[in-house]
Length: 166
Image 1 (cartoon, helix red, strand yellow):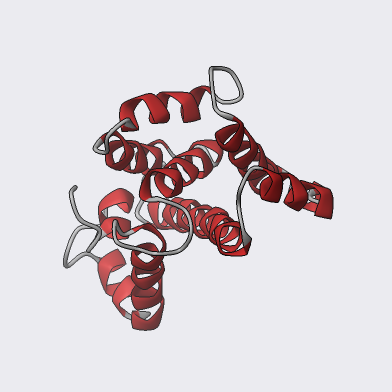
Image 2 (image 1 turned 90 degrees about the vertical axis):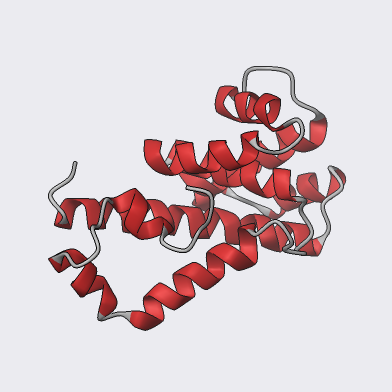
């Protein structure tokens, strides 16, 4: 899967013409906004503070934490296609073990907190991100990525259940 045109359908196993495809087609705004958010946050040319590898690493980590192997595989594949991506993907999947730079450790630590225990996040945690070199645009993008990929994982889980897939 090289593109993102039918990512949700592909990862949920929705066949064109199926009852589930027809059901999804009834929510054109949801389809358009989901796709638009994916492209705005994760397209190679997106200019939102974090570079493409960092954004894909965050997406991979969130998908992994949400336990979605297919979504994780999609983001891993995209990350591994970049220079240095295979090493970064392995580091993301081993986190918090392994050799990471301070910025990556701070970002992934924040991703873990925001994904698994968002109520524990404090202003001090945002200060850690700033100290690691992230400005407001990067912190906003980071938060958007956590929220979006979590949404993707939940959407896919629901669609797979509706489609009779575990």
